[in-house]
Image 1 (cartoon, helix red, strand yellow):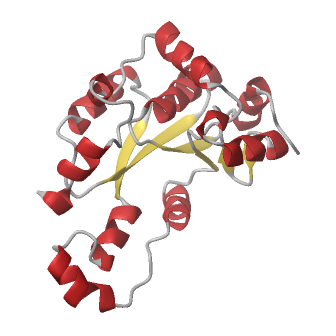
Image 2: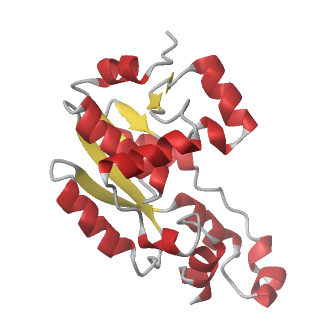
Length: 200
């Protein structure tokens, strides 16, 4: 079954429990708004894959989200990408990396596998992801071919343009993460490289 309409997708997931992968970025927050105020009759678990050291404004922004979405359950999980980087020695000094850590053998922490484990842990039927077609040709091609439902993953913004996503932010009065005041992303270089654990 291929679902290409947001109305169809809303009907399909109605009454289900959804795990939202929430980076606190605009796309995942628009997904949260869509689940809470468009689909409505869903049970949402918002999962943030936390870095070892938070961005200073992450917790403040989470408090705003908790107040706005009182029926959503907010949970945290270690960030698998960061854990993999730590195991690989990426967060060590260059000397340590060259002399020791890069010789270690380890298995990466797989993001999709961990998300699936969180879905099972919180008894969710679907995983909601804020990916959309405007983020690249490969994603655009995927959503046009497969629609907004792929296995047990849903993509409410999949076929939206960036302008449509931003119009939802404007019309609903959503406050974005304060990081957007200085950069176009919550994962920009200043916050990611300077504020994260490996460089503190």
